[in-house]
Length: 356
Image 1: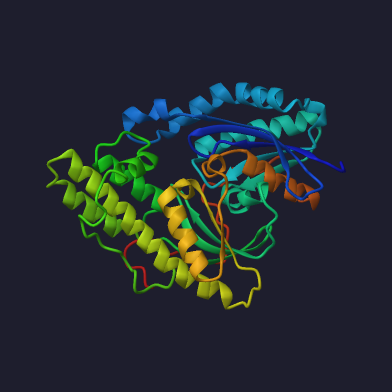
Image 2 (image 1 turned 90 degrees about the vertical axis):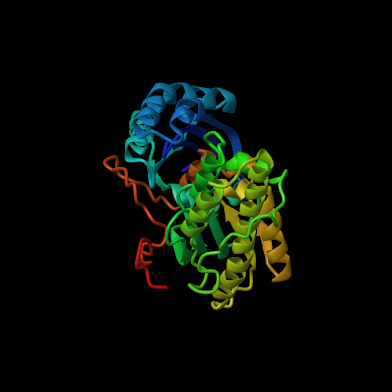
């Protein structure tokens, strides 16, 4: 086994075609040699959301080119690759299959190990691409498809403390943006709208704020936004509603994070790291609020670099590297799994009638 293994990672779980090459480092923080991400915003914006068939077709068309670009930028030749890692789930199965099949074929041709990676674990470990952070740590994973508080106990070991019982936070951002007439992908642009508005203009609900532990809910908030937009008559009112939405989200995460701190500390952990990862972790207002609540409660807030918050292959290569070190490889017949979870023992909490 190489002393400084080089891992090629592939990510195609949704609408980004991504390939990255990283190398192990004596410092404990891997070196990112390349991290290429090709987004499909222009393909999907006319539909107001991701169309799986179009996304998969784009992956097929681009993946060879993106892999070559990643290799060229890294300066690494194929014969130096120690293992190939690819997202095996969760995600859109038609998209997952493109990257997974490419990775398996490449690993077979190079005669190196193939490693399947849980996309969520990529986000969970992503700060370790920049800083040495010991296990365990508290994680808030907020993205377009997931919103969870988890205790990250180690590679492949997670305890879910709370989860959304309906919409993911990123989904709430995108749907609110759409209601305000912001073109896809609207979530990141919504924050820009909010900067021009009055956050106290509209009083919006904070679902299950006083119950359900650190579980989350955003569907009621989205419904409230829908009602309010019917009576908006000016551009300034749109800015005000965006600002009110942004502030409401910040308040929800502030309160729920304090509850999550208490849950996490029930195990008497000495380390008090609070990692916030996933696409929504790029939101500046949320970052500021998380730092505030962390400082007040003796936690150190840690965020991935902005470019590592969204879907990328460096985080997939990182998990691949960690698995490579302990020889945790996969057979070439591994299939895509669109509903992979981190804490497989946690009960399903979603939909009408959920008891908290």
